[in-house]
Amino acid sequence: MVKRQDIKQKTLSSLFWKLFEKGGRAVVELAVQIAMARLLAPEYFGALAIMLVFVNVGNVIVQSGLNTALVQAPEADGDDCSTVFWMSLAISLVLYAVVFLAAPAVASFYAMDGLAWPLRVLALVLVVSAFNAVQVAIVSRRLEFEKIFRATMASVLASGILGVAAAVAGVGLWALVAQQLSYQIANCIVLGFQVRWLPRLVFKADRARGLFSFGWKLLASGLLDQGYQSLSDLIIGKQFSASSLGMVSQGKKYPQAVGSMLDGAIQPVMLSAVSRVQDDVAYVKRLVRRALKTSTFLIVPSMALFAMVAEPLVALLLGEKWLPCVPFLQMYCFIYALLPIHTTNLQALNGMGRSDLFLRLELVKKAYGVVFLLVAAFVFKDVYVMVGTYMLTGIISTFVNAWPNRRVIGYSYAEQVRDICPAFLLAAASAALAWPAGLLGLPGAATILLQAAVMVGAYLGLARAFKVEALAYLVATAGELVGFRRARG
Image (cartoon, rainbow, N blue to C red; front, side, top):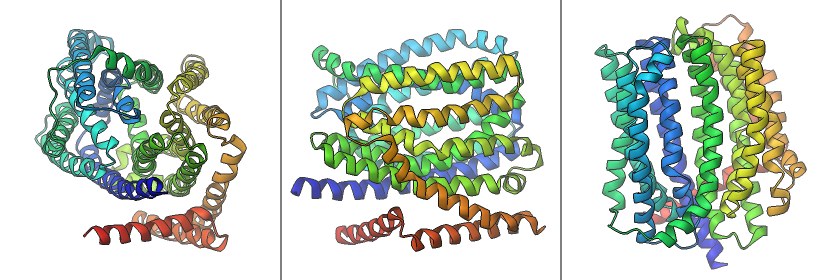
């Protein structure tokens, strides 16, 4: 009982800081992205999307699932952290050399003469990530997410100011590179002051094998997922144009930010909590159900509202030149509305140490996902159909991701659908009530505010009237968080 109470208190504290971290980062990053979108042309964002394909794939390899292995492992000491660091650093240096040498070929393939050196500089993120990943793993094991909050806010502010200043100075694509690289460096520095960890000249081969036996499956899964997500960017950038890719990238960015802010605050905390009680399957199921219900209750109405006000919001914040991204934004709102059922199930498997099942799921999902994507790109030859395939894949994948947990923690797909149905039904009803406000012919800002007010009021009112469990839990949790913060000081 003491153990559970202690975990609950740590989880609530972690959730408090994770919500602040994700929320604060999302607000600042959105402000920065809006400013940079007004200053820079869509093709620069398309070029950044192409460069990030190589950097993000490299980051998956650098981390190799080893940081998650450190979090999940029942026991991990300083030698384990040093071992993981040296492995990650060696991989990062090799990958950086590959990207450095390949950069001119990438620039030539996409007919972007100025892409080579920005890509080479941006790829330095890989080297920084080798150190940063271990820092984050240490903090996550301890459920000390307030340290990540401080590092995130400091780095997002510093990198945002630098990026906007560079854009104002007229350096074009280099402004986006400076913003991305400075974020990672600043995050690493601020965490370094708090974590006080430095790698020792220690490498334990037996521990490396043990951690990698868990991590390699996450590495393969991460590569599959990142490769699949990046495939459309590579195809759009080559088959269509950098400007088209910029529109798709911008349309994805904002729903992704909202989804990461809400779902991303809950899932890392859940992984850390589940990994500590994985021997108590009934308790794990309670944690997972709570995470799924809460995340869905928050994300689904947010995405419905975002899709509804997309056109006036884009025109108001980004300007008329970005209106072609509206359909992509609305499609990604649907995709990210399904995010909780994906992440909750996958994090549950990780927390239970079943990275083998995680990998099998990724193989299955990417098999049909790639087929859909290639058909859309080379048969239909339509960028809207390409993004639409992610919607279809997302629907099918809700079943695929949920299926193993019927056996692992006793949480079936049918139970999960019942648990998320209230959020979808209430969001649909609330959106139907708010939609007519868009027909009044009000100015863009007034339309957005009115529709948001009607939908939020209707959603919360209906949730209270129908006594939705997630709302009661959120209210109770908010009260506990306030009490916990007061008790601490």
